[in-house]
Image (cartoon, rainbow, N blue to C red; front, side):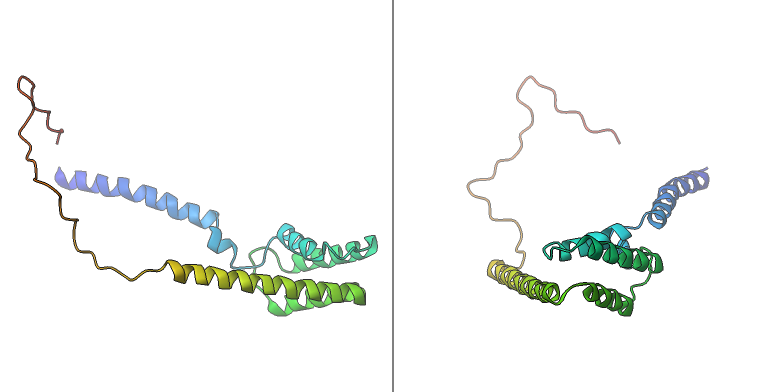
Length: 165
């Protein structure tokens, strides 16, 4: 009888683990989703943000959109990242821009990188500032004053019931 109970308990515990593993395969987590190419929408958002201040003509916008569409079809979301293909997309997009727009784009990218490096430097300084010396655990702090011992319930009251086992 005990062997049967142990088997049933093991089966009951294994079922949720199997369901959890199945869910993880169906729905990629945050780290799994970033391992490959971004979605078409994310790629479009990325380039829209980067090119937003360049005053692109309608023709330029349409040509760049077409390039992003082609890239997304050739490199679907989650597929392995192809650095050469990304470089080629950037080269094609830069080819659509006028020389003034290219200069402005490069200047904005340099400013963005400098701001990110400054932010990262400030964050590292902040982490160093708040890191104190490592302390060893030395047990609970000493108690102040005399220790009081539990003497039971006040006179005339029943003691609390023990929890069921």
